[in-house]
Length: 443
Image (cartoon, helix red, strand yellow):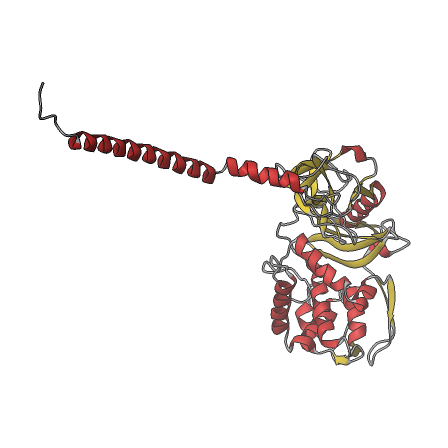
């Protein structure tokens, strides 16, 4: 599928809304090879780059993000609640060769430690214990997962289990993963857990203390994938899903999420080669190193003008953006390529006009392509000239249908008057002739 790259229009406290986000010819690193990619600026939700972001994919252990969210809804104020592992928690995982913390039936462990085991170690056994205790049963918990996904807006996600083992009825999209990840990172405790590089789970009634390390190698300072700006959040790998990673990075006051699915992972002599990690690092290095926030429009520079009516010695009204327009654009992009194209611009504006009065909207173009929309307002206050206005009203009256109607009425009345007068005069003359006496005498 064709790759698309979209501009990111970031808005600060004075920014305006965007009507749409355009496709621009900014290509990401050529090394990005994973089948599904979604790179977003979290400050606005604007998409920087996407590839098959709406395609149905398998989430693998990224599933555990939803498991953690639902766990926090029940235990956020009781994180040290002790739960007991049962045989039913462990049995479904037998023979799956999946990632586990190593819990044993009868083992007692707190919710807090289970969440670390779930998100740092990616333990499927932790997911099963939490699901049963939160939902009452695993099946009921899965129903809760699907309901929560709909609530979040992840409408193309469906869960079949709490841990992410392969199931044809267990799927999502990169866009939905982003929405779920944002919910996780909005929780301070979970945000801290997924950003933990290593953690020691204290001894339980059945095991000694266990040190676990995060499966996200972008957090590991000793890894070739390490990137200091990355703050979490979750990996996932199955044969059908491929290598997957949803992550968050922060730099220069801006926050980004990258969802990379369908990558490849191989291990040779203990060295992991994971294209999801490699692609994620390349995407972050690209956007963090090649883009910068810039002011493209200020509120003092006129961007258009419109003819004024009823204003003394002023023919045009200058229009300025209502609010400052800022955008994250490539560092090499020239500000001179920014143009403003008004639409629904009136033919004229009658005075009086208030400063800041909305006149129209306009598209903002970068390099000839739309990156957003601004409101254009009057740059100054303009008073109405009463003589000009009265003259206008008089001229309008003489050109109005009423004036034509009155004139036509007068013409008709005059015509009737002359007709009636003419007929009256004829009758009068005829009457005089009838009354004139005849001469009885002849000479």
